[in-house]
Image (cartoon, rainbow, N blue to C red):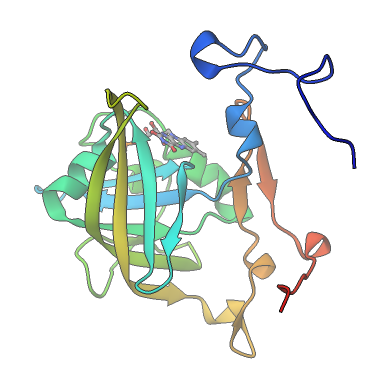
Length: 211
Ligand SMILES: Cc1cc2nc3c(=O)[nH]c(=O)nc-3n(C[C@H](O)[C@H](O)[C@H](O)COP(=O)(O)O)c2cc1C
């Protein structure tokens, strides 16, 4: 395997000085990323739905997920108010609807209605799920962390973490009780302005951990 070092065939940069490329590659390198399609509601009951690809799972027991809001967006404000949110799986058939829900609209606009989606009642929390999505998590807020630089200066980005307190899985995705990741056709966010990847069975490979 070729060793990469400080040489002419390596593009090296320090992000604070700029990347010197037509597009910032950071997003494309740390990708594709799962999408946190987050439903929330404000204290007046107004619904909100938005995608966040700075999203992932951070713990198994209890399950904890989180997403990062670049700017203090409506989703974070709602979760601060109610302490609850739901996560919904974005599948290939739901891709275009998900995209509609990222529109910059005033807080009183309900993105469920905007994208023609059905708010389905949750069981443990007061925030609805996306009825069309085959998998949803009901979550209770655990922490909102404002990010900071290496020097401790505040960054206008908020990492919102929540414990998953209830899980809904379409039974069609359980094959002999095992969750069928590829069967759900999840999509993930790549880099650039518009790149996405779809998960399919063809690219599955298995590798056991060393004993
Ligand atoms: C696939 C996708 C991923 C996104 N990921 C993020 C993200 O990680 N963080 C963020 O702040 N905005 C992200 N956005 C933009 C937000 O969805 C957009 O700003 C939205 O209007 C926020 O809604 P809200 O103000 O109702 O919370 C993403 C948009 C798309 C389409």
